[in-house]
Amino acid sequence: MKMIWAVIRPECAQRVITALDGVGIGGMTRLHVTGHGRGMGITLGSVHYTEIPKEMLMIVVPDNYVAKAVTIIRAEAKTGAKNTHKEGTTGDGKIFITYVEDSFAIRTAGKAGMKLKE
Amino acid sequence: MKQIIAIIRDERVEETKTALEKTGVPGITFLYVTGRGRQKGTANAHELGEVLNRNFRMQLTSAETAHGPAESGKEISAGSLLPEKKSESGFLPKRMLVIIAHDAEVESIVQAIVNVNQTGRYGDGRIFICPMITAIRVRTGERGDKAIS
Image (cartoon, rainbow over all chains, first blue to last red; front, side, top):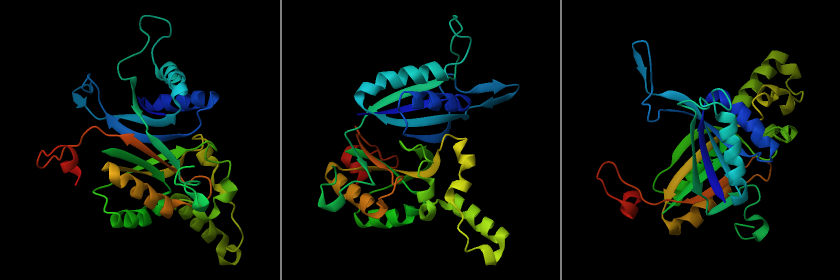
């Protein structure tokens, strides 16, 4: 089981969610975050912004879904003209993947004298 | 060292905090998040009645006021309050707890969270246990297990 943290543009979030739904990845958690990447933010006129609003999706999936999820997030969160050398622009986001050793559904964990994990 | 990520109902946060204090957990980080499970947040809206989160409850109160006390006994279905959430693909407000704990403490922390948060309804939340490589206390620079005890 793996945990996927995807930092994406807020305007792409809905597209990504709908697409993940399409392949049966329904459960996810959404966080509003701010941050910047190697670009160190953006300068608009005379103002420099380092805390750019992003949307973070936290998805836990079985190992065999990871590649599928990453492909979908990349396809939907990428901006710029498709199929050209300009595909993707700075600030499209990042995807991080970590291990999950164990997971519990609180609703059913340890019910009726069972072990904590079913 | 393990990272425990728990996603729980908004209104159980205080009870959870109290329960976790008793297990001697070193520290907790709380995040406001929205989320959904396989039910996509709305499928069991009619069951949510008593477990509506704070925001919904506020709407419920104002709806009751608008109808006047005579009609306040009338059942207001939770489903009627949900359409605006549906537009957001059924994401409901939840609270995320992040706890970094020693390996030996994980079991008791998970048990404490489950005890307080289990209602048996959809939307009780999840707990994920992830490995954590190290921790550093900013104040002193201590590393590893010392940083979280």
